[in-house]
Length: 108
Image 1 (tube, one colour):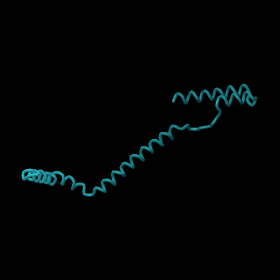
Image 2 (cartoon, helix red, strand yellow):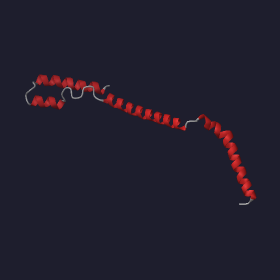
Image 3 (cartoon, one colour):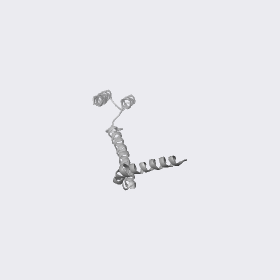
Image 4 (cartoon, helix red, strand yellow):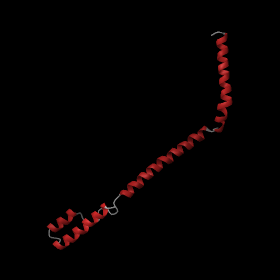
């Protein structure tokens, strides 16, 4: 590389240094502690992930049945009636209650 090549390289590197000192350094000086920025970014990401899982858990909890396993299904009532453990009148009454409960849950 000749004299002019070295002069050009010096000028460009000197210009880059001036630009760095005038533009980039004041911006970088605001963020003196890069480790602190990294730490708080990780904390923020962790909080967002925790909040996401919290919302998912609450939504799943809210969707659960109010009283799972309570009462009889219609097939259970039919089996009790078939076995003779329920009279016709009891079966019809229990069937009406079960169907009304299903219809009320579908209307919500």
